[in-house]
Image (tube, rainbow, N blue to C red; front, side, top):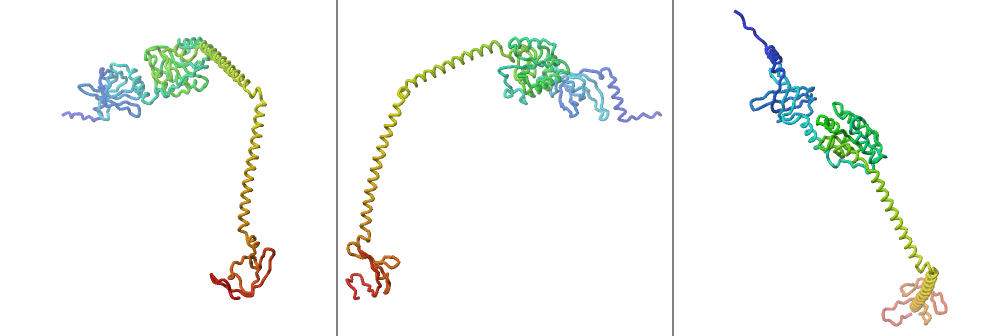
Length: 411
């Protein structure tokens, strides 16, 4: 009896994996469906499911393939995947390994354009508040474009025709291809480092969205936004719009239009200078005429015709003021004298000396204190008596105190 062969789980999974990878259809196929459960891993791989109305299949896109996508897949997006079916041996799960992806109904580049435009707009890179004004008089222009394209010839020709004095510095760069975006970023940095440019023109001729894609790269958009020098975007033709157009300080529909926006017509500037010169001459003549009229008016004033009149009038005024001042001083002195006389009369009327003259005497102690009552002195005290014609010194032998109303005391 033949015993049946027993396989391990790993052997079965490897066998099925080999069958899938060697199958003509499963090893290389296109699959259409709608993305769901999309997840971008930190390592750069994309994990998602592809589904339709009947079923779903797990999908994986490795980092090296994901980096080649110009857009980021989103849930609900209908796509066509190119890849192969294989089995992940550790879990026994089969899945579609996607190598390329293309949206259905709209190009991948257009989706990438819309996604980046939305992202940068939400960050504020398109806000008018960040737009810098072009200088009114441009002396130096930095041009970032291909040195062999028609755009550079158009810009130089029109700029020099409008103003032959303008200086042009060319920063040659690729404007198409895989390395174009990096070279444009580097050229923008060099133009800013140069530091002499009044404005930067970034542009190229028209083309398809693939041809213009370097100007839709995020690194280019951020380099334009970071530029300290105003940037004019002149990419493609009037109907072509790139991300650079939205970020730049000014968009020109064509490179030729950019040259016109960046320069001023020399003839117009000369005409402006002539007009300013005429206004200056007219204003100067008007100032001179006004000054002449004022001078004539001043010359006709009486003070300049008879200058001594003012001196004589001032002298008369001073004499009048002197007379008034003397009169006022006399009047005030007279009032003061009269006041002093009245005060003197009042003082004399209340003076003890006037009383003494009428036959009375004034009694004081030896220290000069006035004695108005017998209670102020004692027997044997020495007092002074002042009379109208002199004074005497006396010693008290006796004293008597009279009550109120007594006419005499017995001494």
